[in-house]
Image (cartoon, rainbow, N blue to C red):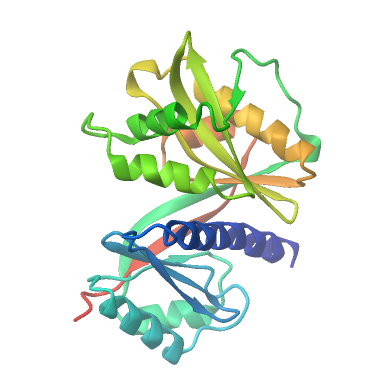
Length: 264
């Protein structure tokens, strides 16, 4: 039961943080993200050309009507597929429904957990700044540059970083090399759980320990805020996941992201 309750808290902080972000961004049209809340069961989000569902199967069984409602909503948003993040602790009703509806595996995500109270902090090697109004623009640009796979910094990624920074439950962190902003990330806090996300380093500055310092600084901030645990989600077999493991995070569970057939 303890494991299930922790999973609920982890999925809740992800879902409610995304929900708050969408509400904030919609205050400044023409942002087109949207959400469907299936009461006490989970959230479905549409962001750009993709949609994904979080939290289903952890609080109450999922019914055929629930899934039908989700798929109908996604079709109405002109999105071709629904992706559902399935926690291995989810009720079997969700698994059976996805099988019956011919959902297939898209990819896996690793969910990591750290017990803050037993964590031993190593010495800090690089200074980490808190982000505020005076440095938020260069922080957001560094975040976007870290995610720019083709080298082109996208304004939408900058706007995404600023949108998450603006939420009161989030705190942002920045690392510099000299005067240059080179890496950053966010800590979200909710009900004794901290979540690390939106973490990136500009490619030319990778391999210097900046990610490690961002993790340590945010874990320290989470502990100061009264968190019992810190969680982070990574893609499978990545440098980010290996960083988490080296610093003492445990692989708490692996989520299967299931995709629907084309929704017509």
